[in-house]
Length: 78
Image 1 (cartoon, one colour):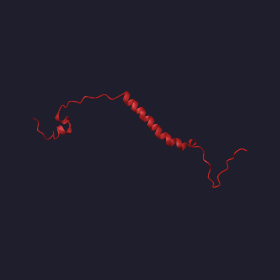
Image 2: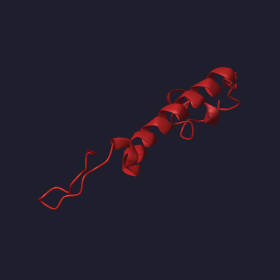
Image 3: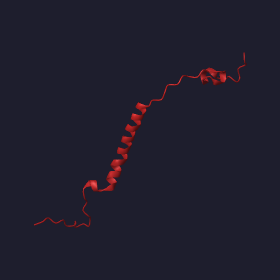
Image 4: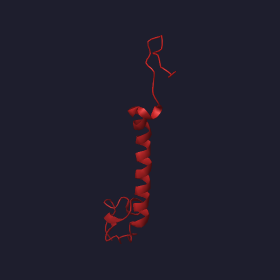
């Protein structure tokens, strides 16, 4: 005799396997896409690193870093 599935008596519908619900794939897929994108970003960063730039030479006191060129406007020229 074949097995028949009767609806539950309390009015609830029977649920299927978890992989048949689209919300499950949205919950799993979002973080999975982020992980894949991070590995793509890592591979791009390793393959094409930014070149190291030389520090520019300051031409005047106004172009010095803040600690060295502080109060340059109030200091008289020598």
